[in-house]
Length: 543
Image (cartoon, rainbow, N blue to C red):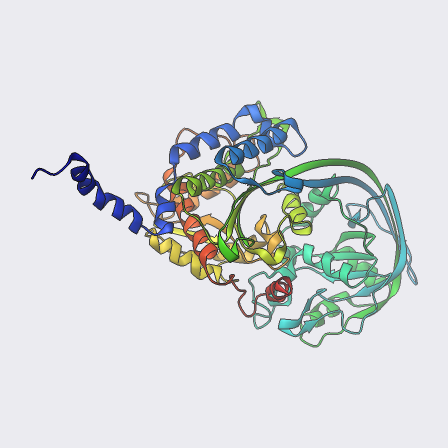
């Protein structure tokens, strides 16, 4: 008997069909990555038509609309405010004009920029403050390290002087040694002073502890200051003071600042009330605006569907500014059209693969990162998903457009169990995971959008490129990174270049997708490691 054509067709195709069914969800996702689709997103987002995607500009709004349209095209559910793809980010910009006087036994008026910089922490055109002063060491409260610089101090209504960095800078037995912790960042110092009820904070600058000179401080803090508009707290003013100027102020009041600084780095240090006070006034020119994060959701299935894994990248750059070599459009091709295109391409891979995760996957184009992580801060402060339901965040910021590598890296590998998940995902793509020691020393983990969610306890990674390039000599990747930083980073020259390769970014996307599906389908959420300064926030988030 001759077999029917239908039977013959089944017998011929059955192995292929069975083979496809046997692929793991992670492999199906990896195979669905479309390099050409990625390139198309990249070229549009980095084109002159989008005018550099500046925050609050037409180009920025066009980028947000493009992302929302792509989410809609893929059939992702709106995951922003009120059933839309958009999440509101209110921004306030203040240009400060401050004055600062020392009161007490040796009164004096200090020079703006020469001695100090100062800005308002309120949303008002003018603020005034007169109060006593306190020296609170490094300004750190770290229960897991048994460290509390505010123990026994009453700082309510007072101005707190604190040191930047953390005690590990000088004593490697403390905290994480020379690896910068979040406790060492100026952002943390301000947050802690606010929690303690202080009315003002002054960061004492040294080039060694800040890791940059005083000129960087004046360059960063004397122009327009942009931040998320939030309700007022106890904190009225914040600023920096040059170490020599601070030493002179303390000495005039009979206090040895150098001795205090040395003592502050030793366990058991107790802060002191200072015999002088400060009078500060800050007039500010105000400017308010609104921008938007853009979110689309691939719904999960089953009992874990209300939880989510976030895959994000910021879409903003610097817009149109002062021309450099005749070019005024800051296209931001690598930073971060490359990451935004990856978010869209990974959303496409999820949809095309047909993989149905247990937890939802939420794709997010983040606004106003270049203004100080404002878009991600707004989301952390007012999330559209309860924080306890956000299992993890995977951030893509500046992708590898230089070619295939044998290695890959990420910021935050040492902070949570996500590091092990990422390492396993990388191995499945034949990649070794390396750690950039210089990034640890610089505190790079604290400087991209994932960190806004980390601060409220969400485990997160930010993907980095590897350093071992296929077909290139040792050190080639480091040379390329240096060339980018020196000639294109935050410049109009960060634009699409003819030699860009999609091979390396495809590797990165495959690893991120494998990590995302592993987290999405795991019985429990990733956990913080013992000793991480974010473990307490993570436990509080789940409660």
